Amino acid sequence: MLGPFSARLPGNRLHLQHGPIDLIIEAFGEPQAVELAYHAAVDLFVDVLPELVKELPQLRQYGEVRFKGAIAQRMARACRPYARTQFITPMAAVAGSVADYMLQAMTTVAPLQRAYVNNGGDIAVHLAPGQGMDIGIIGDQNAPQPVATARIESNSAVRGIATSGRGGRSFSLGIADSVTVLAHNAAAADAAATMIANAVTLDHPAIRRQPANSLDPDSDLGDRLVTIDVGTLPPTDCAGALARGADVARHYHQAGLIESAFLSLQGQSRIVGPLPKTKFLEEVSA
Image (tube, rainbow, N blue to C red; front, side):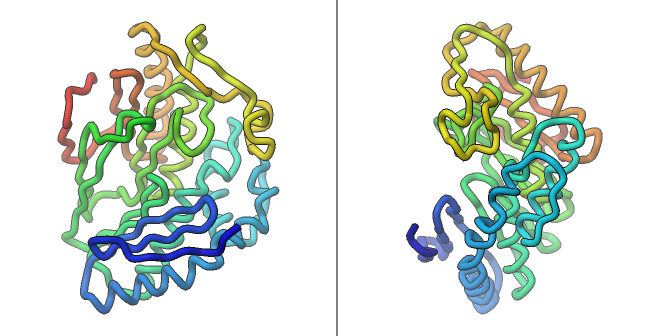
């Protein structure tokens, strides 16, 4: 495996990549503060993947495990509310946890106005008082074009966004085209988006599933059936599958685990909780 890679992108964004971890980072503030934050991110990133690899076998396990690494601890903490009653491993929150960890390092060393760390669509956000940030919400991970935008203000509890579903970087037990969750940090959003996307499901001949470990022998999902293809479904079936996912999202919202969620399947969608200052770019069904 090649070592960590870093580069500057147009707009003074920072690109960090190492193995499966691929970060786009952008910070706003005084130039000296931005440079200080970027240098901190580059220095810290060298050890991120090696530290995760040390505990990878345990991170793929279901059940209560004590972890040494800061990112592994974040992953376990984000998944703990769901692990009491459902199958989930800390791997469900790996992308969001890495984003949170990197962002915290940046904001610790420099007084930034705004910043984000985007780890393949799972995003940690920093907003100083009076600041805001617009985010795009996609309707299909296989065709990631925004269908809506939402604005996060500094007085909002939202500091993390994550998207899960069929066609993403990870396997899904469900059939959702996408599930985007807004939560108090990216790790929490990541875990919740995984669980809600898993809940958008039904049995239908147009849906093809395969054991996860037949696609990836190291998958934390073992022989659980993951979705590999979804044909055209009757609108009533799509509505039923979305209703199942929305019920789960509503439960998480009431429990304070998420702030809001946007669920999408074959042109239909559901919104749970308030999406702040949302502007739809195309018609979305309620």
